[in-house]
Length: 136
Length: 447
Image (cartoon, rainbow over all chains, first blue to last red; front, side):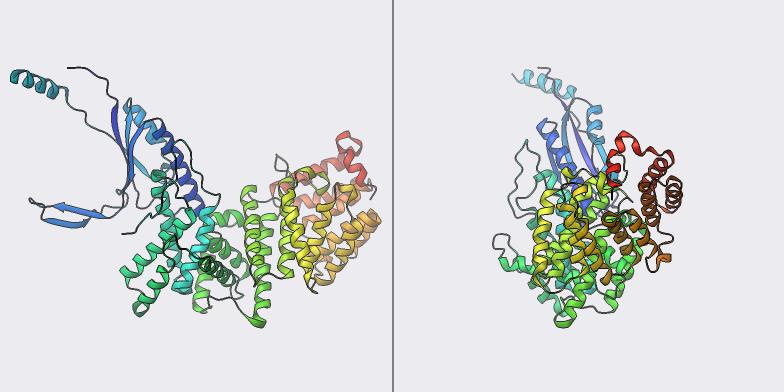
């Protein structure tokens, strides 16, 4: 089993997406668009953002044991609405937080949630390796 | 669901895409006008909300997918799609719904956008201009309304530019819109006899908008320059239209261009006012002056000589002079003689007195100030005392000059005006006329 260094992955979730730009003037909207674009481009050039998308506000919620319920939603409070995400590939939690801090929406009340992507557990890998051996 | 994007993206990695400066503002004006033309003037707020949402969609998606090849068309398309969604969902237009949707769907694909569509957009903006400048709305509210609807300024930005609170601006805008709604002002360009009257009103508002920006010193400089450039943009738009392509419009546009060319040199890096004679003429914006000269020549087409013609003429004299000493004051004085016949305000008379001083000597200037009819109206006007102080200083009457500058200082209400006057006061008290750096001032004393 090789011990490879894998950079950590973090998900940045942009919250308060429903509201934060409401009060902005066209000029401010253009400025933030520019800033955000510059930010995103820089991070993807550096290979730090590996994926990112805006999310539409309305979607469907599927529930029920057999998935029999399909409802409109989520109707989260606009403060909680997620407007988009970045998947980061960085060295540390600090770096992910540092990137989140650069978000141009913060100044206007947007909130950025930083969530580490759970790594494959080392125990599981050992177990899988042992299993493979016993089958051999 | 709104189709957010129908176009190819154009954002090669490694290159930061740039959006044309003020694109959002200007597309805002066009699209709000277009949607209002379709929905009716009583749904102006709805039009504004929809365009705001379209711009928010740009903010939401462009950073991830890049700037569309034709950003303006994108904004237009998304605004229309949002409008169609809204009309279908809310059922607010009842029996008109089908008609409105078909209007919105016209020219709906980017590829077959016809020249006639561009014309429609222009016509709508022109109509909106006449609505914003309708005489039923008080003049100052007209300026605020034009900034909001045609130029996409927020109430906060308008407040900053016009030195009012955001709340006061919001109130003013709400009232103005209410008036327009309740009076049932048609969304149309007036015709026949009404047109020239209403056009004059539009010009006055644009002139006021420009002057709000041009007023020497108050407010953040950048914001105020933007007002001048918006006024020029709207006046140019008017001049390019058959309705506004007339001598008076060209004269106003020329006046604005000449003055705007000098904008960056009117204040030094510390925010101090620089007089015409102290300005670095090599920094005057030559392309703007050339444009001004072009429109000035267009303005000579008719028989009418408006106040804009004369003021543009005066500004042209300044712009044409390579340095202060070679200014054609004789011509400027004769233009002021003409202006005072159209506009007998004491402020014009005060400016004329300065021209007189330059042609006939400082004493003649002082006499001219004394002879201003209705001079009492200038009693609280700091420039009266600043001019008199300058005259006395040139005659080396230091005490008299200091007295006037002190009075002017009491009356001036902005920081840069006060700084300027304090400098003048200090100079007159110290009698520093011979000082080396003031040698330029010595030449002007020849009068």
